Each structure stands twice: as structure tokens, then as C-alpha cells.
Amino acid sequence: MNNQPALSKSLKVYQIVFLGLAWMTPMIFFTVYGVAYDAAGGQMVLAYLIAFLAIFFTASSYSRMVKAYPIMESAYTYTKKAIHPRLGFLVGWALLLDYIFSPIIAILTFGIFMHTEFPSIPVYVWAIVMNIILALVNIVGIKSVARISGISVVVQQRIPPL
Image (tube, rainbow, N blue to C red):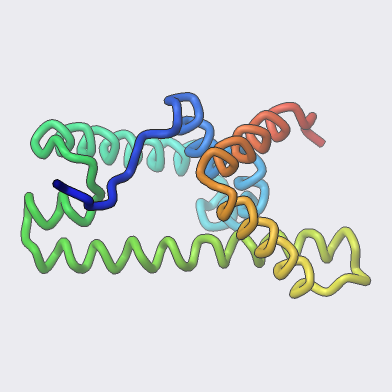
């Protein structure tokens, strides 16, 4: 009798796609476009092309790793198995830091933008409110996260450009 906890597949492919797109939709690029334009010396098309190539080769590498190690894992495990356990350990820590700092940056950016629209409400209030909302959505479950991500993607695609 094996009573070990296990994860179950509860999302459909389109929900997973929307989760990914929620982090790559145009609203995210609006926050950094001016900074990126300056950093790229006005060569945004070339910068996006280089980023696309990096993403393409990363996706291709993941595809090969999934075939070589047909288990649901992450970059940490693939690096550990394919290269070296110590490098896998470093990749794991890098991923953890990314998972910690990316939401912090997103929340702060949200707070700054909302403070710009409503100057009487401090940035930290917006950050706290957004953290509470995101916590509640996550507590409800992964399907609620997928639903909110899908709505976010659809709404952002329908907003006309300025």
C-alpha cells in the first residue's frame, strides 16, 4: 500500500498556454520598453530577435531533455543529470531566486503604476492589496490561477494601443 502524496494533472493544454502567455503579454513589455530601447541603442528589433533565438534554443533544449529523461522535472534536475549535481544545485538556487524576485518586481511595478494613476494611495498599499488578491487566487487553486491568467491575456489583447 503506497500512501505517498502525488500530483494530479488538472489543467488542460490551453490553460497551461494561458499561464505562460500571462507572463509574456504586451502589458509586461510596456513597463520596460523605454529602458530596453535605450539599452539596445534603438535596435529593439535586433534585441527581440536575439531574445527569440535564445528562447527558441532553450525550448529546443528542454524538448531534448524531456526525451532523454522522460519525467516531469525542471532545469535543476536536467542540469543535475546531464551535466553535474553541483551545477544543478546552482541552477536550482537561481530558479528559486527567480521565483522569489520576479513576483516582487511585478508587484512593485503594479504598485508604482497604480500610484501614478491614483497618487493619493501609496505604492505600498497597492502592493499589499495585490499580494492579498494573488494569495487568495492561489489559495483557491491552480484552476483559479489559470482562469485569471486567461482573462488577463484576453483583456490585454483587446486593449487598443494608445
